[in-house]
Image 1 (cartoon, rainbow, N blue to C red):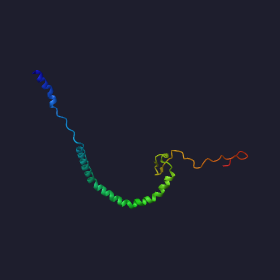
Image 2 (tube, rainbow, N blue to C red; image 1 turned 60 degrees about the horizontal axis):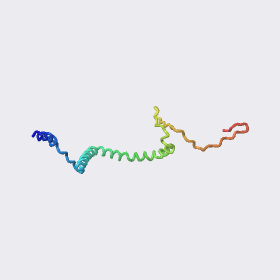
Image 3 (cartoon, one colour; image 1 turned 90 degrees about the horizontal axis):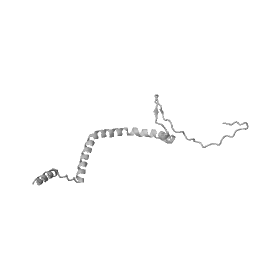
Image 4 (cartoon, helix red, strand yellow; image 1 turned 30 degrees about the vertical axis):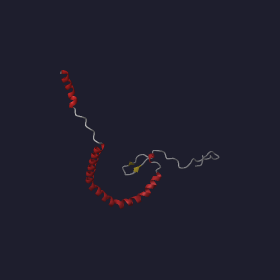
Length: 129
């Protein structure tokens, strides 16, 4: 009888444990997450709508001015791009106290002309430049 009582006490903690929870179906958890995200996004859009409307009005008003600016700057920007062969050859711009902006080249400029023949010395050994 003592053995039976001992076995009951040993088995009691195992019987007292809760059965493991059955995992939820994948679709149920995902759908709850989707619904939660939809609610969060709707709330954000409602809060942002006035600011977006104001920004749209400002862009409509600035549209003609920006178009004219692009037509004016476009040719000069293309001219600048033709002068710069590779942007990695230049250091970061520096603004001087007077407002001038310096963009220093950190790589030597390649020669534009091919190698010329060495000048021939004259009868007395002089070279004409």
